[in-house]
Length: 568
Image (cartoon, rainbow, N blue to C red):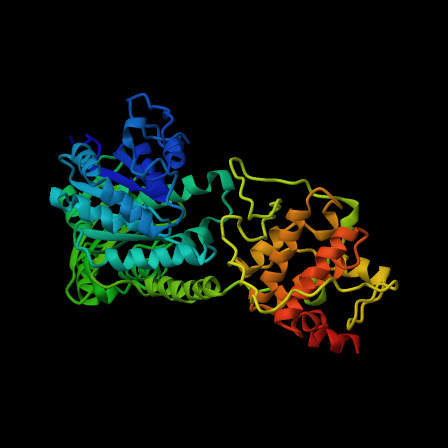
């Protein structure tokens, strides 16, 4: 049922956070409103009760929300709290909840003269307003879309969402579109305190529509020529892009009114810039002036203004209203304007251009691969003395395979234990395994330039045994083996022998020079261990390698070319 003090029964359906807040502003002014959102958090901010006016309606400017819990509908999937700026997720939520949404809107908007879908273009939910339009289109409601555009300070994601949402929205044919420009609102109201800003700008967006809807039911205002409810409904549902504004005129003349209209269309405080008077198809102009101003204004003014507007719009449909008021603050008359055009204002293109530029930059960043670090010599550094600490033996529960290493120590950077190591290549039967290589007293093995104790300590310290990205598999088993110097001197000879055989086989099977270098260094260190058993097994492993690949072990121990260049 239409409210007694308004010309039209307007119902607001808010989508997303921004749309829900605008719908709540309609609710604060006494209109029926509801909110749809994928975020419980946003809905809970709208749900607390609002302060009521004496007549039972929501008190305007009370600062409290105007929606009950029944007017807040959650449309997310699987309990997720919000769309996270993901437009595709927002669309999916609306499609998945289409039946519930249709039923709720039908019950809420039944009999309405105008249904305003409010949304913030930029968010993942609000930018999907075209999907909401599709869901309720078969209800044949008189739909008007009111959507906000992101400001310049907002992210590239918000601008891309807005551009995509705009593109889909203009393909639909609602009865009208209203685009509110957050950039212009921020420029004009940036001095408002942070805790009041959003409520204040939502009021700026909604209040002019509410004022036009209440034109003929105000105390102290006498209509000389009315802009009635049917005129207002035709203007709202004119199937074009709407612009509305209010301005104070210093004089009531034809030139002053025309200039005021042009300025409002080109530089609205709410709408995007670039509305052209020549493109206007429908226009409603309401003038309010005190008796003293009207007494000095001839009737010919009214005829001349109508003729001028018809010429400047190229034959647009003009609705004129004239009202006598008690006073107009700081001026001779007040202008209220609402106009529609079937052309998008040029300011819309600026949003699209920003989306292309910033969205393209963000896309390029996301396509970049994370650069690998060139660690050079420090890649093999281990700054902890290995003989000072022995890691404990670990085995997964219910696991007792004799052919696996006795320990499984794995850091976040090492290959997962579940990845099997390549099978060891069998040593040709015809090749005998040489006897242990004798170790001289000075700690130098035959054919190797290895200093004694200092070199042994340094080399072992510089070989952490940590695998790097991309070495899963070949290096995985090597990294899972116990460090040779940590093995006991007796009691596990068979296990120790298996360990060094696996090291030798891993060396022979590997195609990675980094892996071979790591194994060679470990065997070289073990060859100089304090434990005679460790030295024996290391020597057998080295002999096993040399029997198959005579130069491979020595080549692996040789410094890398870039390291030689640094040392030289």
